[in-house]
Amino acid sequence: MRPAAARRRMEAAQLLRVAERRTAPVETPSTTWPGLDLADACAVKQDNIAHRLAFV
Image 1 (spheres, one colour):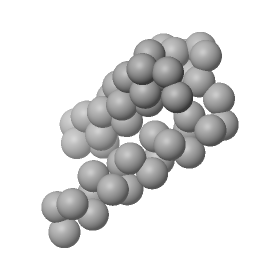
Image 2 (image 1 turned 90 degrees about the vertical axis):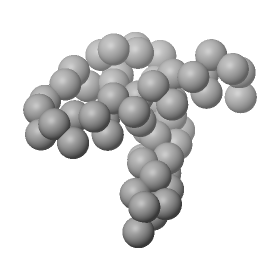
Image 3 (image 1 turned 180 degrees about the vertical axis):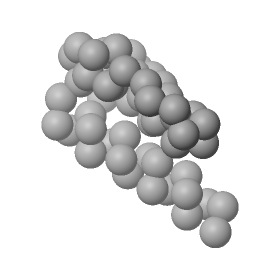
Image 4 (image 1 turned 135 degrees about the vertical axis):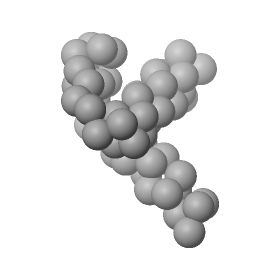
C-alpha cells in the first residue's frame, strides 16, 4: 500500500472516532477522500475496532 493511501485511511479512521466521541456528524470519508474504495472502508473499520479494543 502506498504511504498516501495509508495516511488517508488513518485520517478517515480518526475523523470517524472524533465524530463518534463528539456525537456530531461529519462528511462521509468518501466525500473527503474521493479515492477511497471498499478495501479502504474495511481497513478504516478494522482500525477503529482495534482502537476500541485497545482501551478495553
